[in-house]
Amino acid sequence: MDGVTSTTSPASAWTEPSSTGAALLLLGRGSDPSAEKGVECPGELPSPSDPTLVERAQRAKAALGDRLFVLGHHYQRDEVIQFADVTGDSFKLAREAAARPEAEFIVFCGVHFMAESADILTTETQKVVLPDLGAGCSMADMAALPQVETAWELLEDLGIAATTVPVTYMNSSADIKGFVGRNNGVVCTSSNAKRALTWAFERGDGRSSRPEGTGRERPEGTGRERKVLFLPDQHLGRNTAVLEMGFDLEDCVLYNPHKPNGGLTPEQLRDARMILWRGHCSVHGRFTLGCVEEVRERVPGVNVLVHPECRHEVVTAADYVGSTEYIIKTIEAAPAGSAWAVGTELNLVRRLANAHPDKQIMFLDRNVCYCSTMNRIDLPHLVWALEELAAGRLVNQITVDRDTARHARVALDQMLALP
Ligand code: SF4
Image (tube, rainbow, N blue to C red; front, side, top):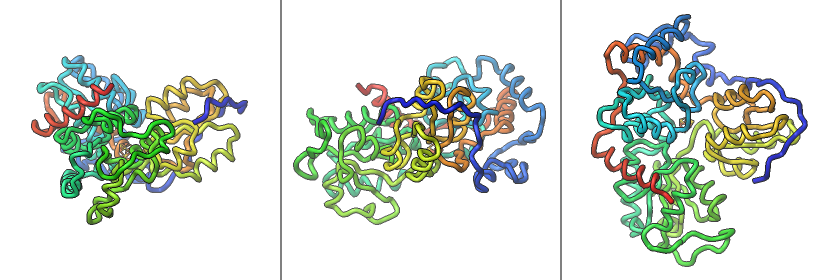
């Protein structure tokens, strides 16, 4: 990954990428705005065209005072993020919630797995609320507990479960985090994936079994070295292992939960160091090598900055790779006049462009690419949730059962204890 490249291109105003029909439909534009009214919502949603929505949200927030803490993920819409007491990535937000024991209600403007993590990390008396229960995550949904248990049984039958450490990305359900905690694994984020994998490969046997240096000197023997089962994002797992830890692509195998034995032979599983779950982010998975090549041709000197949830060939072709927090800090530190093509969710890229008019910031794809589930949290849902809470009615509470939460907490605490 290269150093910062400054260009002399004049700063240009943000240009919305061209829209795709599906993206606009998901955003409710170009369609009947009342079509989704009431979907997954047990109450009466205010009309999206109500001109008093902002005022209503402010009033409900003021009425709840310190009893309320609103969290806003970076990928949320501007109309929602303006009411967030703190913004951040999923892990930062969960920690912020845990640091506010005085807040009775945590309203999480994000997606379901994030609200679950907040419930796990907060006290028994705090209530976590997700304004729209339809706000899930397609990546988290790609790893269901029965599928993962089936995969683990296969590893047990092959005699390699004992040397395999499960590692799950934060973007997974509480069930999966619980499974990982029960099996002595760890949760990771896109910021600490390398540290989590390093811990996993070194765990228990008192020696490092990962390649050193360039990593081209592969460890000897098969089937007995420490392995990692990485859930559910194949790209974060592969990118971290290969680009940051020196493993070869051949050290990684892809486990497809929809095929018998994951579509792999016993030898492939025994020889692998990274068993990657076949999951991905439907937003970051859209960026292609063609997008990188096209923007480099169109904007000479452009810096390509992407999230590690992108495909391996995209990350390899980029100049900078990192988490959403890293992306924000990199843009903040960039010199005026520099040009940036950013490969992450469009709400964040647009906000960065608006906050830094002295830099030329563009979306890596030429088409609109919102996270459709993140966008389900809109102002009508937020107003509805806040007004219900202010009226003394607890709605859309997200709870994790005690047993799952206890084990998931083990895996989360292990992440917090990473060296
Ligand atoms: S951006 Fe991707 S990983 Fe994040 S919530 Fe949306 S689908 Fe899930």
